[in-house]
Structures are given as structure tokens and as C-alpha cells.
Image 1 (spheres, rainbow, N blue to C red):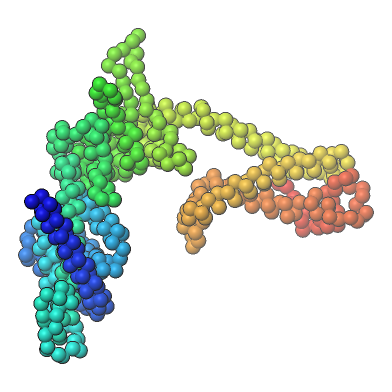
Image 2: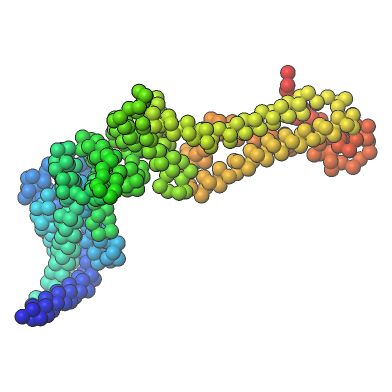
Length: 502
């Protein structure tokens, strides 16, 4: 009996698969003909009539479709697109898109009972439009239906029947995939998010194992797609539940063998958690930061031991990121009370002391030295008597060479690097009628770029460079090896180069 039941099961599965394969092959050309024959007027009627008929059939659905008219038209277009994709797009890609759409419906709290009526309404609205298509077949003889070769229809009715049935099959399959995704993704945690109920959330987590408790709140997986209940709580305005989830994930728990702390999982599944909180619920910023601090309940010498979990404020989960996205988000938030939180203060002081201070001081000292050299070379030693003295002229040449080497070359390297990074990352910003690299929207970087252009202009009229190529003996009296006055350096160049140091 067991062998007979097993054989019957797989024979039934094989028969159903063969029938479904035959339907897809039979429906595909008629589906393509359907969408190529729909006019713009018919499409507009479809976009309007499906919601009119659906609201008349199911009054409760009106509370779920509160979007604008443009959004409803977009939803209608997606319905048609899903029907077309069922026959003409890779099945794995189509399933991934529908799974992602179904998970969003989980967050919206859409009842699965509405999908069946909605699919039927779509078919009923499409039926009269198909009947309007011109039919060149006039033969009324009976032929086998291409769908299953199991029943006969008049030949002139075959195109209309196949287009309607193909549309019904694709829409029904889409609805079944969405219903299955919603049933799999409608966990108790997602239901608590939908009702924004922290008590319901705590009840949902009672059955969660300690090593899975954080995952239940951070990822719901259906097929290859996943949705984060915490992200959806922030996005949908369920901030009470979101606060409870953040506090629960960042609570330290233990059993006989292990400690469980959800900071790593939180930043793994939600690498932009700080940015999401600051955008959607800024008042929860302190909840996240407080969760990264452990304070002992015991004191010693009137002091309590404290542990700061700064790993994810210093190091990003993406190794290509120089700094943590969480720390950058808090800095860009521009809120004095938030940035003065103890863990942020400690983290920023640590970065300054261990990494940034010496680079900053080295750059400032180098800039100061370059400024002193520039003033000396361009103002203090710009007289003719310096150019006539061989020793002084050589010293002046060295100083000006240092100006261009330490100033121009350093600025040129930095700006070229930033421009290349902006081009590679397509990071542009509008400026007047043009698009410029985004880094040039900062005032300090604009001044730096203007200084680069100024040094470049100075190099074009630099007398030292022009006189190097002049081999005439008329100006031998001006200097020795390096000259600053010659026939190649014209009066116009002298006027353009003349320094203003007073």
C-alpha cells in the first residue's frame, strides 16, 4: 500500500507538471497578442475599472487603497506587467520580484482573502476589451482547445478564449505566489509591527530560542528575499515596537555555555541602522547608543565599571568603507546633544588621538611651511638686486621650486584623485547649469581648487621657467646659473606676475 501511494503521488505530480507546461506553451503566443493589441484607451479603462469594480465587490478594500490616482494607475500597470512577465521573463527573476512584493504586502498588513476577488475582477475587466479585438477567423467548426486538448470549441472563439484563459492563469498564479509569500512572512513579530504593539512583540518572542531571538526581529526570509521587521517598523511609523526591538536586540542574555548580544547581528542585517533611525525616528537615536553601553550594577570607589561596544562605530561591516556609516550618520545629523553622548565622545576622541591628530598636524605644519616659503620667495625676495646676485638668485630659484613642488604638485595630486573618484562613483552635484564633482560643493575644497588654478597661472608666467629656455647673452648681468630677467619674459608677463604683498 505504501508503494502504491508513493507511486500515485509522483504520477499525480508529473501529470500536473505536464499539464502546466502545456498551458504555458499554449498561452504564450496568445498572451503576446493580447498585450500587443491593447490600445491606450483600453489601458486607461482597465486602470480605472479594476478599482471601481473591486471596491464595489469588496468594500473593506477601500481602506487599503488610500494612495493617489497616479499610484493606483501604477499598481494597475504592475498587474499587467506581472501577467506578461509570467510568459516572457526568466522564472527565477519573476519569482524573486513577486517574493519581494509579497514581503512588502506583509508589512502593509494586506489580508490574503482579497487576492482571489482582485484576480477575478482583473479578468472580468479584461474580458470585454478582448471581445473588442477584430477577429479574422469566421469558421464555426469545432476544434480541440490548445490549452489541454480535452474539449472542443468553435474555431472563431479560440483566440478570445485563449487570451482570457491565459490572462486568468497568469494573474491567478501571481496571486497564489503572493499569498504563499504573505503566509510564510506573516510571523508573529511582523504582526506586532503591523499593530505597533510592544506587548504583542514580547509575547511573540517568548518561544524564540536565545540564539535566534535577534534574527526573528532583524530578518524574515522567504525564498531568496528577506525583509527586516525592525526596518519596516521604522519605515511604517511603528516606533513603539521599533524602540522595544532595539532595546531587546541590544540586551545581553546568557545560558550555561554562551552570552548573546545582538550588536553584530544588528549591524550585519541593518548596516544603515543609524541613518534609518535618524531619518525616521530621531528620538530613538539615544536608544541605539545606550544599547551599545554596558554599565555594571556594582560600584567600586564610587565608580561603576562601564564597557563601550565601539566596534561598529569605528569599523564598518563593508571593508571598503573607511569609517563606520553609523558614526558618519551621527556626525551629519548636526545635533549637539546627540553628538555629546558619552560613547560618541569616546569614539571621536579615540579616532582623533590614534589616527587623525598626527595626519592633521602634519598637513597643517606642511601648509604653514609652504606659506612661509611662498611669502619669502614671492614678496621678500622679489627685488632686482636679488636677481643680480648669483647666490641669492640660486636660493630664490630653490624656494620657488619648493613652492611649486610642495604646493602645486600636492594640490594637483589631491584634486585629480578626488575627480577620478567622483567620475568612477558618478558622484556629481548641480552647480548653476553644470554638474561638478560633489566634493567641490564644500567651501574649503573650492578655495583649494582656486589656489591650484592660481598656482597654475603663476607657472605660465614664471620668469625662472621662461629664462631657462632663453640662450641669449644680453642679460648675463642678471644673476648666474638661474636668471629671472630675459628677453623671453615680456612686460605683459611681468605685469601679470607682479606680486601684491603690501
